[in-house]
Image (tube, rainbow, N blue to C red; front, top):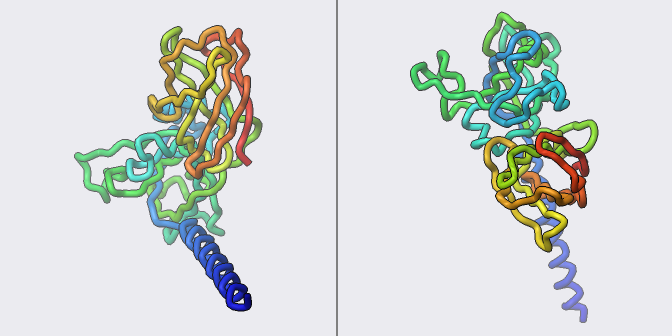
Amino acid sequence: MAAKRVSRALAVMLLVQSLLGRVAADARQVKWRNAHATFYGGSDASGTMGGACGYGNLYSQGYGTDTTALSAALFDNGAKCGACFAITCYRSRWCLPGKPILQVTATNFCPSNPNLPNDNGGWCNPPRRHFDLAQPAFTQIAIYEGGIVPVLFKRVPCKRSGPIRYTINGQRYFNLVLISNVGGVGDVSAVSVKGANSNYWEPMRRNWGQNWQSDTILVGQSLSFQVTTSDGSTVTVLDAVASNWEFGQTFEGGQFS
């Protein structure tokens, strides 16, 4: 019996050590990394509207001017749309005093320019990690005249006001749902929809950015959604959309902490 107790105690100790090791590994993953930042969109950020994530008007969607376009190395073909990053200017004479930290949301893609060198105009060329910030965001961490500055960045939780939003576009045989205002880690990795007339959840496929597609006829049914983010967290919202919905409407429900 004594031997069994020792064995169990050893097993528990090894389990605790393993868990602590995982926690330490996770902590190391959330570390500052090197990149560069430029800006675009004008002083009012009006040129940042629309974009490769599909959010449309960033003011009305709640993202405001604290937004960024990501280079291909960070954008991940749209999978990082909605992700939030902390960014600070680093070791440049153009950095603002006090090294303020900015939090931005990924809402657009910064395309490559293979005709220019990576370090002279081709800022978003692979494999460079690059943030093309909305101009008002850039000027929170660096002086406008700097143009391009080295930065440090890391992923951070997204701070959102209100529930997740579901904007339904398309036509009778083609449903395209924009998922926006997502908290938690912010970037959506999977969406499922369930009409009132269905007994199962239908996985939707990413069409582009954070627009998710279903080819099932859903008109006239109330709709429920399951939204999963890149950390594996899932929110289920039953009857998020009333049965009399119309294309172009936006509905709300559920949120990640």
